[in-house]
Amino acid sequence: MAQNYTTPLARAARIMEIIIPCYMFGKAWGIADARTVDLFRAMFPPFLIDIAEFFKRIMQTDNANIQRFFSTMSGAIVGFVVVALLALVMHFVLRDRKYLDSLRFTSVSLIPIAVLNGTLSHAIKTLIENMGTQTADALYASTVSSSRGNILIDGTFYLTAMWMMGRRTGVSRGRRYGVIGVGIGFMVIYMALGLMISPGEWQALLPKLQQALAHH
Amino acid sequence: MTITKQRFVTINKYALWAAIIVYLYGVFGTKIIQPGIFFALAAGFFNLLHQKYFIARPRLAAHIWLLPAVIGAFTYPVLMEKQPSGQNTFYFMLTLIISLIPYLQLIFGKTEEQPPKKERLKVISFRIFTQITVFMLYSVLTAYSFIYGSNVALFFWGMFHVVTVAILPFLFGRVLCGWLCPNATLQDGLFKNMTYPRPIPKLPQAIEEQSHSTAMYLSGEVDKNAPYFPFTLLISWFPMFFCETMFDLTGDLWYPIYFMYGLYIGSLLLPWRKMCTHFCWLSSYRGIAAHGSLWRIRYNKSKCKQCKVCQAEKACPFYIDICEQDNEMPATCCLCFSCMEACPFEGVITFKRSPEEKARIKAIGGKAA
Image 1 (tube, chains in turn red, blue):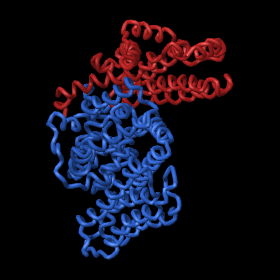
Image 2 (cartoon, each protein chain N blue to C red):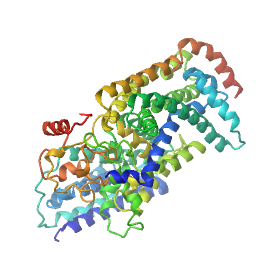
Image 3 (cartoon, rainbow over the protein chains, first blue to last red):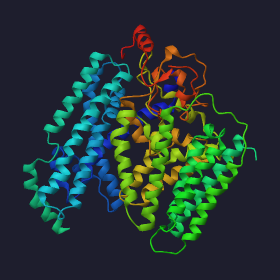
């Protein structure tokens, strides 16, 4: 069996296993437009959105379709950098494989958080689409507040995915606790940096948002 | 008429094809569907998916084909159509013909086939029930959306997305491919029983060997370099991703139609389930998440007699070399339980890891045990 792991397609598969989750993880940070960028800054750590916006300014085109592609790619680039940094810590904890395989471990296990990012960006889309149909407080409750459950669920899936992946790739029990520690640390930092729109932020954002929507 | 195995399949297969053609013509052509047609789809799938059981009981199988006729009679006044066309009789007759032809053939048929010695696993019966239910829901909602101009099919795909992306892969792995996917149901029920020479009968070895190379070990030799998923399957995600991103297709009713019908056509070009194992754009992203799943089917190597009945080409639709696994199925497993049913021995392929297996892992120093 082991010789099959070194076939060209097996090597390429390992690269894809890094690229796809990184893309899914970061793409939400790049899809903001002029109307929604403030909401995205409030929903996600603002510096991540700012970096993605910087890449978007570099990759400019008149074609709306290609621009959409560039936008998601901008977020994906930031996503890749974040995963690569997290993988450094993971590599230090795992200590049993090449950095590239630690990176793969990190990116695949991050898929629940990629799903979470997608859910939160979808909440913003829903919020924008329903502006004016509900009161501001009801809208906040139905879109933003309801996403708190997703953080809990996806966070749990993230930790269990890391544990099971560690188990399946022969990480000893002691190190698996370390891996879980890295995951918890990442989640705490991610949330502390400003995940989710707080009620205060919402109150500050609302007039801006209404103004922006009136212009469009 | 003597009902041989081949004849049983042929009777059900052509009736199911007729139901599919009438359905497609109704959804995309005339925009009129008689509700009995949905049950004709269900009856066809049910008989074909349980063919081993029904071959020895053709009369029982015949009665399944009465269901569309009965439902058709009850729903005679309510056609699925936007404007009343007054064609109730025509569409009811069509449903009646589709259901009565296999009914009459099976009810007067005699068979010498023996029922299978091993009883069908309850979990497989439940899987088939789930497959048919999801397929029916999918076909009803698609028909409703295209006939009435509603977006209800998108709700189905939204829920499908939530369940298959955000929940199931982390709990059970690639259960989507064995239990929920409409293409899987179509392949298992219909395409598997089609004997025409496939336009692409064999894939290059480099592609074929991928399904044998994605195993991961829980104990013994753990190869940390092993890929979790086949490359061709992962790369198949890109066309869908490019279309979705560049043309902003989310929310477009035709978008799920394109990707699902694309899978149907792709599956007709390749041998059974090769599309799923190597090229499915729907399962690639969902599939990698399966590597961190909480539970998988257990393979108790210590009890295995290496009889190879469950060998990739014989039992497993996903071409997994089960005897090469250690402890459990790999991330590519679709949880169809075919291996569990095929295995002639008790306790080899199970829901829970056996105490002997735990002891074996411990003995060889498996860190992960």
